[in-house]
Figure 1: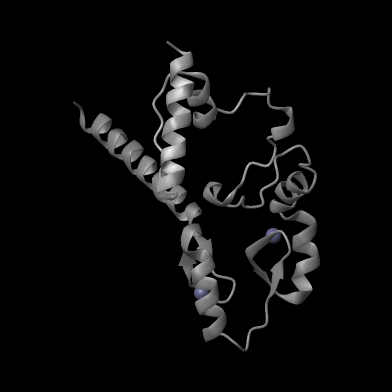
Figure 2: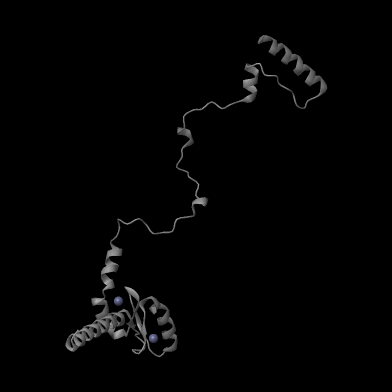
Length: 164
Ligand SMILES: [Zn+2]
Ligand SMILES: [Zn+2]
């Protein structure tokens, strides 16, 4: 490798590096309260709250399209006219076709009332007593007086005889 080739390699590497740094720098946002502050967009909202507290003498107004856009009152009108979030906001405003974003009640609290019981096909309810009367099943009487139980046993004997 010649000296000249090595030099141009280094230069291209340097220019790449500076381009990278440039890109990185672009990711930072200049604090509207103090131009020395450079903040990552993800931290901007939190930083603005703190910086507003520390710079209570500076009165800034919020862009209606993005809460992290803090502007001097006389700059607001110009900013709002050119704010890139204005387009996003307009899209949301007219996104009537999107499903509603209201939080739904937890599924466990929802009682599905769409079911109409009247429309269910009629299903005969199973009556064990009626089944026993019609079939040779020995029934026992629970409770009742001794004479009632004796009468019941007698009637059962007659009933069961019919099945023989
Ligand atoms: Zn700041
Ligand atoms: Zn804005």
